[in-house]
Length: 99
Image: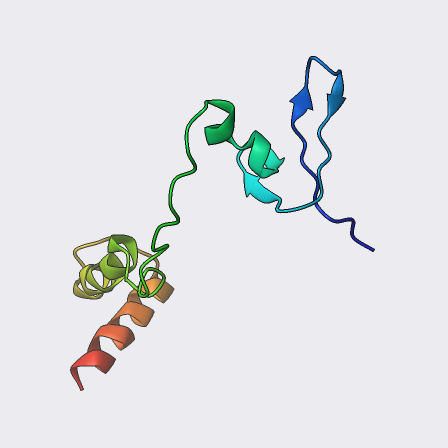
């Protein structure tokens, strides 16, 4: 059974934790209620919610995965050293793409 998140802000003057249970949000410093968010503690207004991650953020190929094809071509051509097993696998992968 999980316990609901509670505000973990230490109130030094009262020598206790806040432990509020409503409208808790996660922050780097821990779960906080609206009175103890980093912006509220600095006397600033809360920033408006942003759009979040772009729709294709997790589907965009990284440069590292894109370089795998070039590595296979270099291994298959013999320009890059590798084991015999890797050489044969790279040759099959490169020749399989041409067909």
